Image 1 (tube, rainbow, N blue to C red):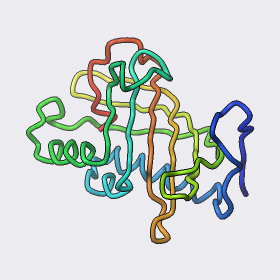
Image 2: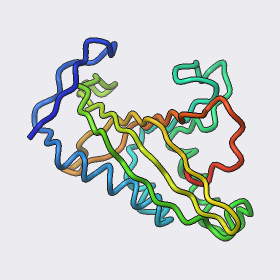
Image 3: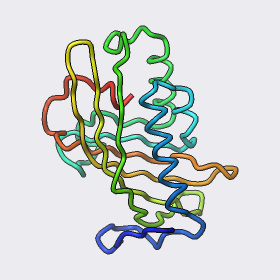
Image 4: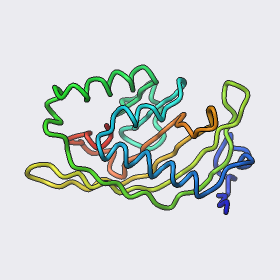
Length: 179
């Protein structure tokens, strides 16, 4: 079954490319969330393509990351560096690591977006809730994530992830749930 969203308000999107199944896309998103929740940093990092971009804007949903502060604006090299830092156990903000669980819902196949290689990536939208438990407190996070995925050697890989937090205009005491 394929569920296709109305792409009329989403600039630059084409029809959903052929060959994408709603179930397999949802399973990929669930896997990505599980790897992050379980602190499987090498598994999570392995999901990304070489041209990846991970963006968590601050102060709005569509602020320009080149001229405005972002909580995260990482290319593939920066993703790898952060995963190495977290894996050392010396990142004191996460010692011990938070217990996390994400719920992914309202998954929509939004359409195809042309990439620099001449192919078309699948753009997907989903809502999320994340429960972060620390020694003395629990925090609930919510927002909307836009993913771009593509097949690389018959495996689904993550090209782009934009996480727009519901409360991204407020100070955020920890970003552990974002890895």
